[in-house]
Image (cartoon, rainbow, N blue to C red; front, side, top):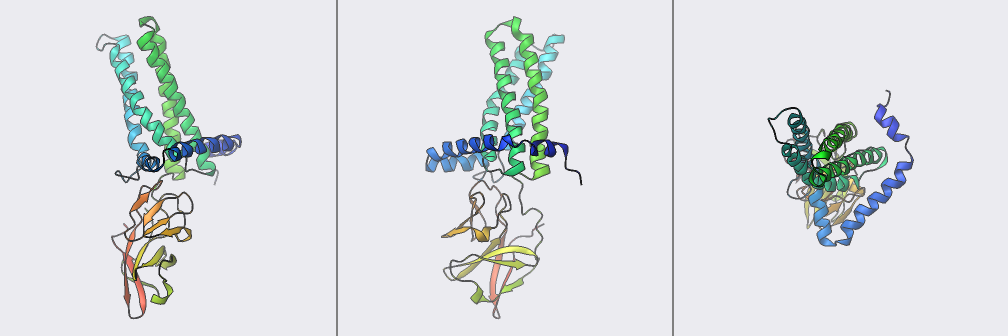
Length: 297
């Protein structure tokens, strides 16, 4: 199958990797410099805390909606007397205010990307950053240059909106084409009832053990004598949790550092935003059996 044009073009831009690494290190350094509050802030920016869903796509609807209304208002005000010119100015300002958070959440998600995904994410981020800068210039002209500069300001915001469409396409490709921040367990197939995964002696205290539950990879761990099980595939990017590190009740993904409670699958730290499917575990007749705590579909 022929690779999509956008992937072919971006994949050929090897120079982007060095630039992307610098940006990722900068984002990581900013959060790291804040200590424990920085870790909490990063989780909030991902959407790992409170929301339980990626925050960036939620926020981006606000500036895009405001800028759409602003462009319409600008041209209605220019060609008719139905709206004052200030209507478009207000919409542009609302969009810029919301875009600050969109930029912050976007670059936070970008900091945990890799390979061609990272190049597409970088392209998306740079396009939207250019939009942000262009609209700031447009806003400055509206506020401080007087009415004589208003047509130029409208032209800039119109150009910015055209770039928004391109940036939105790239962002959509990241999610729907590449799967960035998509729940990797959304399409998992597993058992509907209890299935045997091994004898009790196979599960040592405090050790992550990967098993197959009717085709679904699961990690089983014994804590204080009791067995717990969650999906072994990290919901963030598909990392193997069985290769991660277990500290108390929390397993850390070896790929991007997402943390989950092995007792219930809850997200304890990002970049993951979706919890791990949890399993009911029982020991019966010399075997350990598991079944999903809730239906997978």
